[in-house]
Length: 197
Image (cartoon, rainbow, N blue to C red):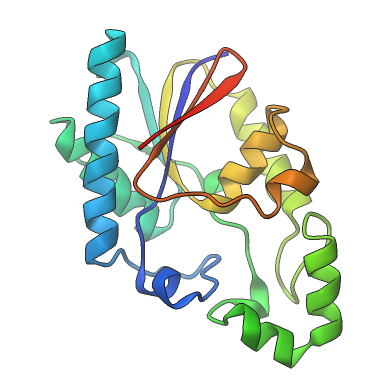
């Protein structure tokens, strides 16, 4: 299996406020830009340590602006053309439907029964008009099957949780609430996962 270098996008104002973004196009804030540059330096150090060349790698991002901004900042650190990467819609964040823009407390107050069901069964229960993690897992699995080269990814926390399940490193239950950090690089290699910060 090709190695995957996975970077969650840097922080946005909605992240800072605890608002679910889903497919809303919220740009990086100042901290998010700093985190993305930091991830680029981690990646450069990993490549140097492992004798990897960016010329043989693929670079791909979610179509959402915060992931594309992150990828371009990372590529800037690596001294690569900013636009030299692919966009793949299968890597977009889980859609939260009507819950997008809300905090957890607001969602709980609006519909406590659905909120409680989703908290108990996060992988299989969708917000109104949104997606389940089962759907996200299927599209991430489809993306993963097409990988032919070591790949740098800039995407989202939800898609990273799904990838961990696809690769058999987590279960839906363990992945559902797993914190996914910003400004770090998750490396999937030889059936394992390492995190570099």
